[in-house]
Length: 128
Image (tube, rainbow, N blue to C red; front, side):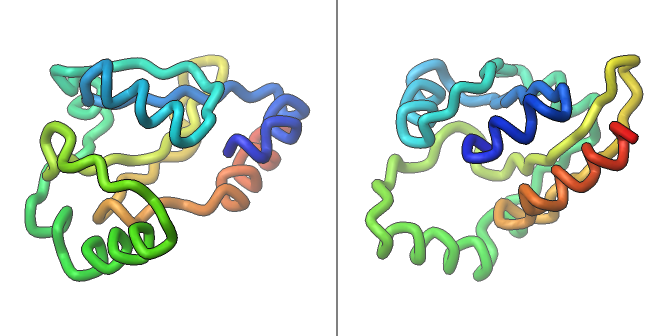
Protein backbone atom coordinates (compact mmCIF):
# COMPACT_ATOMS: atom_id res chain seq x y z
CA UNK A 1 0.00 0.00 0.00
CA UNK A 2 2.92 2.37 0.67
CA UNK A 3 3.82 2.36 -3.02
CA UNK A 4 0.26 3.46 -3.85
CA UNK A 5 0.18 6.49 -1.56
CA UNK A 6 -0.44 8.85 -4.49
CA UNK A 7 -3.36 6.75 -5.79
CA UNK A 8 -4.82 6.60 -2.30
CA UNK A 9 -4.57 10.37 -1.96
CA UNK A 10 -6.29 10.86 -5.33
CA UNK A 11 -9.12 8.61 -4.10
CA UNK A 12 -9.39 10.66 -0.86
CA UNK A 13 -8.56 7.53 1.12
CA UNK A 14 -6.89 7.10 4.47
CA UNK A 15 -5.34 3.78 5.44
CA UNK A 16 -5.21 2.69 9.05
CA UNK A 17 -3.35 -0.32 10.40
CA UNK A 18 -4.76 -2.01 13.50
CA UNK A 19 -2.81 -4.66 15.38
CA UNK A 20 -3.20 -6.46 18.68
CA UNK A 21 0.58 -6.63 19.11
CA UNK A 22 2.77 -4.80 21.57
CA UNK A 23 4.20 -1.33 21.12
CA UNK A 24 7.76 -2.67 20.48
CA UNK A 25 6.48 -5.13 17.85
CA UNK A 26 4.49 -2.33 16.19
CA UNK A 27 7.61 -0.15 16.07
CA UNK A 28 9.61 -3.02 14.52
CA UNK A 29 6.89 -3.63 11.89
CA UNK A 30 6.70 0.06 11.00
CA UNK A 31 10.48 0.23 10.63
CA UNK A 32 10.52 -2.93 8.51
CA UNK A 33 7.73 -1.82 6.18
CA UNK A 34 8.49 1.93 6.11
CA UNK A 35 4.75 2.43 6.61
CA UNK A 36 3.59 5.97 7.21
CA UNK A 37 -0.01 4.95 7.90
CA UNK A 38 -1.62 5.55 11.28
CA UNK A 39 -1.05 2.49 13.43
CA UNK A 40 -3.44 1.68 16.26
CA UNK A 41 -2.92 -0.99 18.88
CA UNK A 42 -5.90 -3.06 19.97
CA UNK A 43 -4.41 -5.35 22.64
CA UNK A 44 -7.83 -6.60 23.79
CA UNK A 45 -8.78 -7.25 20.13
CA UNK A 46 -12.04 -5.37 20.49
CA UNK A 47 -11.95 -4.25 16.85
CA UNK A 48 -11.05 -7.78 15.72
CA UNK A 49 -14.14 -9.13 17.53
CA UNK A 50 -16.46 -6.39 16.26
CA UNK A 51 -15.35 -7.02 12.67
CA UNK A 52 -15.71 -10.80 13.00
CA UNK A 53 -12.08 -11.82 12.60
CA UNK A 54 -11.45 -15.35 13.75
CA UNK A 55 -8.80 -17.22 15.69
CA UNK A 56 -7.51 -20.51 14.33
CA UNK A 57 -4.22 -22.10 15.28
CA UNK A 58 -4.68 -24.74 12.58
CA UNK A 59 -5.26 -22.24 9.77
CA UNK A 60 -2.62 -19.84 11.11
CA UNK A 61 0.10 -22.48 11.01
CA UNK A 62 -0.92 -24.62 8.03
CA UNK A 63 1.50 -25.65 5.30
CA UNK A 64 0.62 -22.61 3.18
CA UNK A 65 1.64 -20.25 5.98
CA UNK A 66 4.82 -22.14 6.84
CA UNK A 67 5.80 -22.13 3.15
CA UNK A 68 5.17 -18.35 2.94
CA UNK A 69 7.41 -17.74 5.97
CA UNK A 70 10.13 -19.94 4.46
CA UNK A 71 10.01 -17.90 1.23
CA UNK A 72 10.27 -14.63 3.18
CA UNK A 73 13.20 -15.91 5.23
CA UNK A 74 15.02 -17.15 2.13
CA UNK A 75 14.49 -13.69 0.59
CA UNK A 76 16.32 -12.12 3.53
CA UNK A 77 13.47 -11.14 5.87
CA UNK A 78 14.40 -11.31 9.53
CA UNK A 79 12.47 -13.71 11.78
CA UNK A 80 11.16 -11.77 14.77
CA UNK A 81 9.64 -14.78 16.45
CA UNK A 82 6.01 -15.26 17.31
CA UNK A 83 4.42 -11.99 18.34
CA UNK A 84 1.39 -12.26 20.60
CA UNK A 85 -1.44 -14.61 19.68
CA UNK A 86 -0.29 -16.44 16.56
CA UNK A 87 -3.77 -17.91 16.07
CA UNK A 88 -5.42 -14.52 15.52
CA UNK A 89 -6.37 -13.98 11.89
CA UNK A 90 -6.73 -10.59 10.26
CA UNK A 91 -8.68 -8.93 7.52
CA UNK A 92 -8.99 -5.94 5.25
CA UNK A 93 -11.91 -3.51 5.34
CA UNK A 94 -13.01 -0.44 3.47
CA UNK A 95 -15.25 1.83 5.52
CA UNK A 96 -16.68 4.90 3.82
CA UNK A 97 -16.95 8.42 5.25
CA UNK A 98 -20.40 7.57 6.67
CA UNK A 99 -19.07 4.55 8.58
CA UNK A 100 -20.61 2.03 6.16
CA UNK A 101 -18.51 -1.07 5.52
CA UNK A 102 -18.05 -1.18 1.76
CA UNK A 103 -15.66 -4.14 1.67
CA UNK A 104 -15.09 -6.80 4.31
CA UNK A 105 -12.39 -9.36 3.64
CA UNK A 106 -11.81 -11.74 6.53
CA UNK A 107 -8.61 -13.70 6.01
CA UNK A 108 -8.85 -17.49 5.98
CA UNK A 109 -5.16 -17.72 6.92
CA UNK A 110 -2.28 -15.23 7.29
CA UNK A 111 -1.41 -15.47 3.58
CA UNK A 112 -4.99 -14.77 2.46
CA UNK A 113 -5.23 -11.05 1.75
CA UNK A 114 -6.71 -9.14 -1.18
CA UNK A 115 -4.17 -7.65 -3.54
CA UNK A 116 -3.48 -3.95 -3.41
CA UNK A 117 -4.92 -3.68 -6.93
CA UNK A 118 -8.17 -5.33 -5.79
CA UNK A 119 -8.44 -2.85 -2.92
CA UNK A 120 -7.75 0.07 -5.26
CA UNK A 121 -10.40 -1.23 -7.69
CA UNK A 122 -12.94 -1.32 -4.85
CA UNK A 123 -11.99 2.22 -3.82
CA UNK A 124 -12.37 3.47 -7.40
CA UNK A 125 -15.84 1.90 -7.64
CA UNK A 126 -16.87 3.57 -4.37
CA UNK A 127 -15.54 6.94 -5.57
CA UNK A 128 -17.76 6.91 -8.67
